[in-house]
Image (cartoon, rainbow, N blue to C red; front, side, top):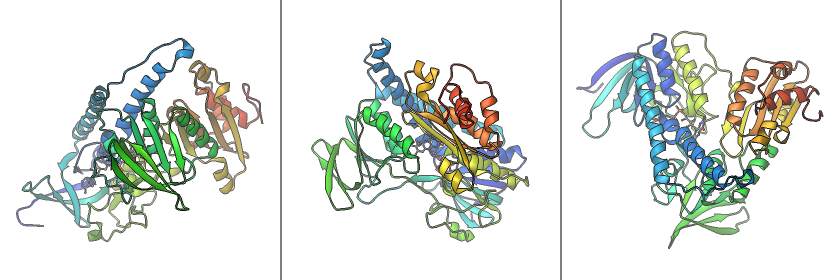
Length: 474
Ligand code: FAD
């Protein structure tokens, strides 16, 4: 400890107030632990300030504008004008409401809040540097620590986020006007969500992607639907091309790409959004002081109880590995706090859903049919195409399907893949089924409201048992 430091002690020290950290802190305090939460930037982390919430606010705005402007078939003739600075202000109001809510909730639960950057001194002490110069240092001693420092966008050679026309997702979500043309590097989930949103707002979007398709890791029939909808919105894709650099042009930028064979191309835009993935943040922490190491991808390895190799130190959320999703961060945060409080908690990673807010949305949970087979199951698969759903027809949204995967032997539901409007909501039912080992009979036998998209979950479960009424059985 440096002379002149203020020293405090706490049972549970949480570093980072994103959805992993603030949830861990609140649960820790609820369980009677004296809990301290340190944040160097903004309560709510990436999710509330620069990720999930701002992007979904804009996606909602873009959907409204696009739907109103393209509903002539339904007899609606409108040409909505988008005032982006107003939409930006509205988004900021939503963000402010949620981030101040996080701060209030922490305080109301008795969590002590500290602003500053935490770095380890040893296995029971962190040093916290407050704000700017002359703001002072503080030393906090702890029984248990939870690392929840999250992730930041990966920067690729030739594209420095410090250069104005090179945008990270965070910078794009601060836009005050809709760009006329945008080059997007990367067709992963963030690139696809933002490209779709901007295309709906009227931007000419060009996506360059090194791989040969959108959304790596998703099944081909899912990618096909989402890619072709994006193409219908005017998004232009160039696959098998890596972005190598950019140059300022009289109007915006020109981005250069290269194929594996060395063939070069150029694409113009007002700016270039780089969305090639995210990397864990550990460089703020001095983890070597406690003998903690990252794996080859920079993540902190943990067990199913969120424990690292250092006995009293946990890691949760993006810094602890894929899937880098807010609800996975929160679920791990709860487990870490409960284990720190001596409870027998553990996380079942099999039942963590994932959603992509494209058009239509994608949501998955558990195993695909191939994964079930690889795991030694004989999969029973049932599907309900949306074109057979009364609700989908009334919404004029018939691209997509609900697929349920189960173990043929026991009927136990192993997973589901959904491509549908509101798939991010619909997947909750399938996640519950996976979590509680429900069977096809349970899903199919649950009476669903008519007419709803959720009926497709029931119907897909019936289809897997050759009992579907509204689709032909396999
Ligand atoms: P973060 O939210 O990254 O928070 C970490 C916090 O730690 C930060 O506030 C940081 O300032 C702080 N910190 C770092 N180092 C220190 C230190 N040494 N001392 C003190 N504080 C420190 N996920 C979804 O589930 N659904 C979505 O729809 C979704 N959309 C997204 C859209 C975009 C554009 C992006 C970028 C991400 C999106 N995500 C989404 C991912 C989601 O934001 C992350 O998975 C989530 O924020 C991870 O939470 P976390 O608590 O691990 O870390």
